Image (cartoon, rainbow, N blue to C red; front, side, top):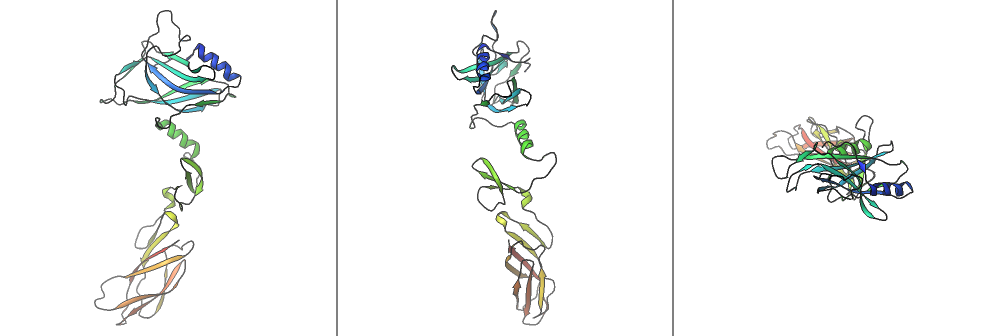
Length: 293
């Protein structure tokens, strides 16, 4: 779409004057159309597009910190029944006295692009940015229908860039969510906490551990060869931050008809003291699973 800048309409100029006097500038929608200005007509005199065809919902309004604001929406042909040449674009806002008005408008004339109907082989999804010059002291808002707007990739990446250290730095902790709002940091121990996969560290191999949501940790390994009726110490791959809550052994290997048991005589956050008992006094090796927090 080849639009060479926006022209403020007469209604837009009136609204701008009110904004400079302290009124809030609330943008409501973007419209696209295929109209051509009539002979003798001017963009300034328009109160609507000449031939409106499609409404683009506003997804964000952002100050560019130079006296201008960017109004963004995403154009898509999904659900569009009939294709058209995108010849005109209009930005609408709310006047505190006159209601919704056409704030600014542009017409590409013959330098326009065709937007095909949806449902075909061509799927169109394009970010539409309109930059308007407004006093830095003005209050600017937008009407955003959260049920109708999907966020474009461009906006999502921009928002991530504001809140996450994508280009360096560090972030620690999880993000707590209250409804749809970030409220603080959390450790994933309660319903509603937002967590990241880095919290669930693990190691692989014959011995290792897996951190779980809620703060629980699973650890596994082998005891090594244990002598009958002799205490031995099993050290966990990592010390549990608080305590080990359970130690569960299983015989490792074929010992035939020998009856065995493994007694856990002491348990701490970092190790278990065990004693192997066998009716034939044979030695044995055990797998184990430990759980704690």
